[in-house]
Image 1 (tube, protein in one colour):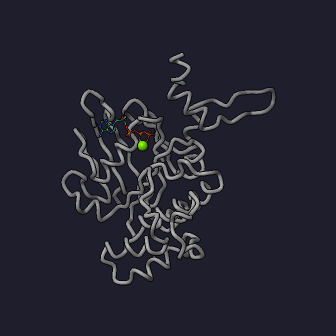
Image 2 (tube, helix red, strand yellow):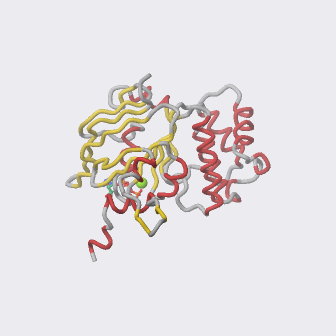
Image 3 (cartoon, protein in one colour):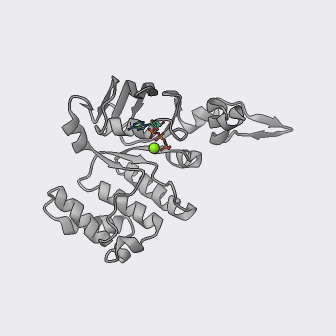
Length: 254
Ligand SMILES: Nc1ncnc2c1ncn2[C@@H]1O[C@H](COP(=O)(O)OP(=O)(O)OP(=O)(O)O)[C@@H](O)[C@H]1O
Ligand SMILES: [Mg+2]
């Protein structure tokens, strides 16, 4: 079976700013793939290219077997994108938000679809409340639920937990795990190393325009030898691996 997402030699510049300088990776179907990178590394730019919202300058990418440049309509049918900022309508209730999206997607039974998703995301009790009264975690869950209407096989989550408190982050993580367990392919971007550590089957580090490492958590941890402290072996955290690979630029600049 082909990969859910396949990216080869993708380049993108904004005027003189060469953001993506040849990005390559593949995402297996039904897996969670985390794209890790600092602010401005080009994570959102890459996601926008894969979601057909932006054209690459060079390289090829396929999503669900469709070429993003040649078959953008088929790609859009195969994906959902939850952006860095929630797309929830504050004035509507949670249920109304979901029904609206289901109607826009021309589904036959918008009410049923909404109720099923509310139950799945533990929002049934809050279904009739305006989204403006939701906590950050509830809003993010509603946002993800909205993006799942129509059952896309591939889901892009751009920084799904930025700005959430620890409890809300754990709720979103559970949602993402459930999605993958149900066979959905998830590509998420994050700046949080523990998020990648918690969720991802594979982790790729985007730095200075290319993927400088791509592997499982264990493979990435093997890049640094465990420090010997008397008789106790200390495993490096993903954060230590990340900083060793990327360099501590704040310290370098100082
Ligand atoms: N439309 C645009 N026009 C000009 N520059 C852009 C545009 N979009 C992104 N950039 C620049 O490209 C670089 C990468 O931006 P991008 O949003 O992809 O980073 P990111 O990894 O998602 O960062 P963050 O973690 O802050 O979300 C940044 O320097 C940004 O200013
Ligand atoms: Mg971004």
